[in-house]
Amino acid sequence: MPKRILSLAALILSLALAVPSHAGISPYARLEYGFNGLAMDEPNARISQNETQLRADGFPADFEKIGPGMGPSASLGLWLFPAFRVGATYSTLRSYREHRLHVPGAFWGEDIDLTMTEIGAEAAVRVRRFGGLTLGGNVASGKAKLVDGFTIEDSGGNYYEDSVSEGTVRTYGAFVGFDQTNAAGVAGFVRLGYQHRDAGSLPMRGTFSDGSTTVAFTDQSVGLDYSGVYFRIGVGFDLVR
Image 1 (cartoon, rainbow, N blue to C red):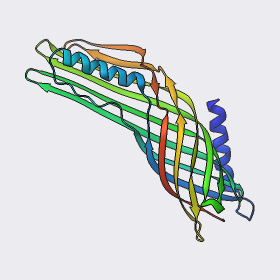
Image 2 (image 1 turned 90 degrees about the horizontal axis):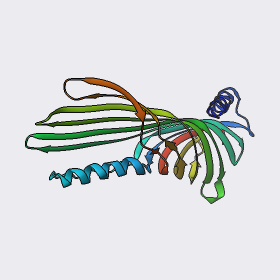
Image 3 (image 1 turned 90 degrees about the vertical axis):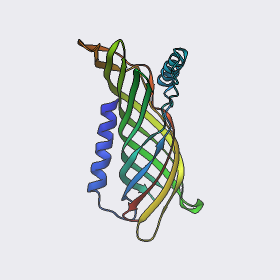
Image 4 (image 1 turned 45 degrees about the vertical axis):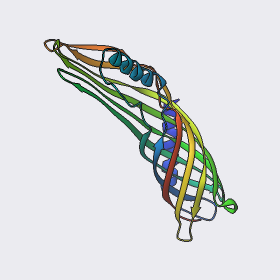
């Protein structure tokens, strides 16, 4: 399925670049930026467990859960009819959390770096008489990645673990928004949607050190769910509208 999605996106992109604009078919481009909510129930449960254990051991732990991902998105395609368009899409997002705990004689730290990159295709309908009300959806091939680093330093020694988990996942979603184009062809829009991106447990590779010996290992990550509501604002261009 991911290969079919990439082939479809490549076909749409080539048509958008090659087809000359006329009254019926014309190219469009959109560039946007926004935030994406991330479900991440299992990673957040692990953060809560670490916090609870540290507090039980007498440490003043207070860690933030994983926050929304931020990043840009872009699309390029064709208006096939005055109110209907199809296009190839690209998007990327990142969410980063840094947890630190310093007490006399001890240090505890963790870095969580989550990214998702998607390439796919979209279709949308725009109703100009309703202020450019736009309804659409998309399907994409996503590459999910988690980089996780963990460190403990105390009287017993220095310990650390670094790991990378990554894999591919099919993603899909729907959105509603307002998209308007002026006489010069410049467009502005806002978009609210939901994207399903449940990557599940991904293959993990990493290293562990007890301060004297370093060992490589492989494992599976906790379940990673990048699904969530997103909001984006952007600009674009319609060659002929």
